[in-house]
Image 1 (cartoon, rainbow, N blue to C red):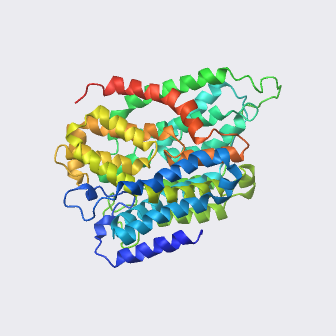
Image 2: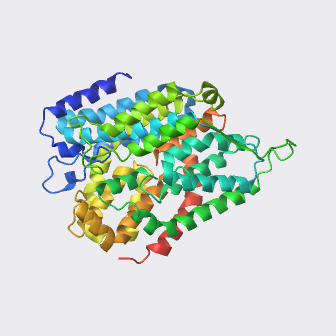
Image 3: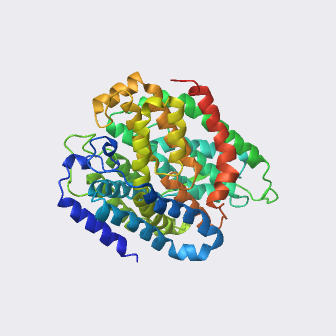
Amino acid sequence: MRKILPVVLLAFLLFGMTNQVNASDFVNPAALSAEIVNSDAEHSLPPVFMVIPFVTLLLLIAVMPLFAHHFWEKHYPKFSIALGTITVLYYLLVMNDTHSLLHTLAEYLSFIALLASLFVASGGILIKVDKKATPMLNVIFLLFGAVIANIIGTTGASMLLIRPFIKINQDRIKPYHIIFFIFLISNIGGALTPIGDPPLFLGFLRGVDFFWVFEHVWYMWLPTIIVVAAVFYFIDSRNNDGQEKSKEYTGQIEFKGYKNVVYLLIILISVFIDPNVISWVPNLYPLPFGIREIIMFSVVYLSYKTADKEILSSNEFDFEPIKEVAYLFIGIFATMIPALQLIAYEANLLGDKLNPGIFYWATGLLSGFLDNAPTYLNFLSAAMGKYGWDVNNAVDVHNFEIEHAVYLQAISVAAVFFGAMTYIGNGPNFMVKSISERAGIKMPSFFAYLIKYSIPILIPIFILVWLAFYYGRV
């Protein structure tokens, strides 16, 4: 069964090469094209029942670990691949639509190349903090991670810091430690730069100025970060586990694996090696990947082969977390194609009736359950469509960010912030969960995460953001 998906992917890739697909479709391999929602779209919309595989996969991810943990742990790749294959075959054989499949394949390859390279490169870096775990130290650690997430991305910051964060709190670690790590470092922290989170980078590729996000989001980012950190401090102050141990601490911070820092820099530089950013970068059409992805996959191999084995051992490094993400998200990416297309269609139809507050909630809530990058693009397309502008035109995007900044701001903030709502809201969430579980931490289920943490903690904070910045705005 594990061999089925590569065969299917190869089949629709080869099939797509025989059709008339423009080279421009691959300029941005991370984007699901929004043009299919226009009246002159090349392909018709999928039927609503084709959302069933996506909903089924989400339910399996949510329910199976609760009631059949060991079975799911062994067989989840088969379920993900089987459900993804249903969607792929429907688009190939019934809708004759290779266009959407090729975009999704390109998007998935970009997604997994970035996550895998950051995961492996950071696995060869060892950070030891020999300080007593206190609520204040934890807050400082989380705030530091939230800041550097804007420099090395939420994935890079998450993979670099999750293991030392667990080790600092090893005598008092609880699931809430990991949940707030996901909140602050894996998601909300990365809202200030295009490097911080994939949706913002897609906006940058489409024409949003690099520093526009910082200028228009910092005053929303800062209070949100502070409030979430304050809630964590209150909860962590009530945790007295490990206080009775009288271990002596040196107060030193140890850092090993400097050569892997070079690999991280290579990854960050490669992010900008894109034809949309640098005109002389070659487009590798008809391949569904570019120079950027080749560099990232090369870093995966080289950083692992040249890593210090003692550091890998100290980090308890293995490939299981990225393997889990790779298998589950190939199914998610495939099965969500119909959902995204139907959402994009409705968003464009209703664009004239949507105000910034509605864009904020619609983008946010859907980003919690769909990949937030295409969700961001779909709603950005709908918002620009209100004014007759095209998301694929860099000049239009630049004008939009100036004349209707509140819409772009609402969509950008929501796509990043609400990624913390579920384990599947953003790529690093699942990786952090997997690493934590392998460290012996019993993480909450999909529904427990929602009911116990994200809904009671994040939603009230996100409501305050809405009231302060978008309520009543037109």
